[in-house]
Length: 371
Ligand code: PEP
Ligand code: MG
Image (cartoon, rainbow, N blue to C red; front, top):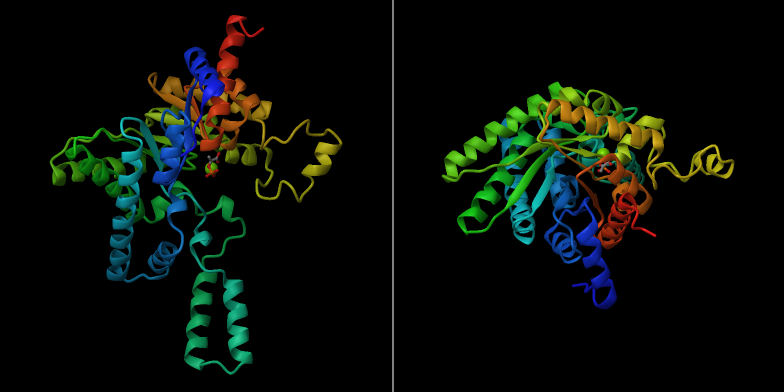
């Protein structure tokens, strides 16, 4: 366990007295949740549940997606439910009494599926070495099936809330796991505070649809467990359309979390995954871009965040607004988010102390006591 000792501890305690911006962390397992708490995080602002779907679980999701047989699908989902319930139980316990925002599955579909190219190479090798014809035929059928899910632009395709709308059994499974873990901890006398976040929303109808699914599922768990469960439901604001229609989206959201990674990507139309390799280095060298907008929030993106916060309050005057993109741990961006009037930023656990200091500096600047 890391220890913040001596002078740093004292300075961070002063920082906490003056800052008005809340500081949360992005974590998706109990150990990181505990680490975040030790560094002073006041909650988990983003639990990326797709990070819980590695190894065997990825295989289970692939079985679910590729198999249309209802029984096979239900069996796969039952396995995932048990695994997820355990994950959430550990995280909520580590963060007892503090909010934990769990984001429903977000990644593009192909990330759950084996690579058709790798399968193709495997088939070629088997053919060259006189492999079993039945195995080759099976692998070829798998490759063709996976290929039928290929998209030209997966980051703009079947991901985020779209995945939950196409496969509602997945959000039902995740919400059941969240609510059941919460009910179990409440029965043990603890105070779990999960919140459910819907990713990549661009219209209020997407949020309304998945909110209804979540509410119904929570009500079923309440009935089955005999425990009252209050679970706020909110959304990521990470697409320009979501920011400019935040007044509509706010009517169905208890909270907004601005995903400035995707919001930067979609506002500029720059791929966040190719920033080092494409034209961006030249743009930076020629000062066409004054700095890397994926590291420090760009003024245009910040304007969208501000608009989203203001409009969100029109839709829901009590809405809570935070940021959970990488910018949440960047001191210059933290100061901008403070000035916009966000409630909190959420960043990697190791950046929590830095964010606490940056938030305090921003608050002191307001009072003129930063000199
Ligand atoms: C974001 O887009 O800013 C975000 C936090 O989500 P992710 O990075 O997981 O897409
Ligand atoms: Mg995102």
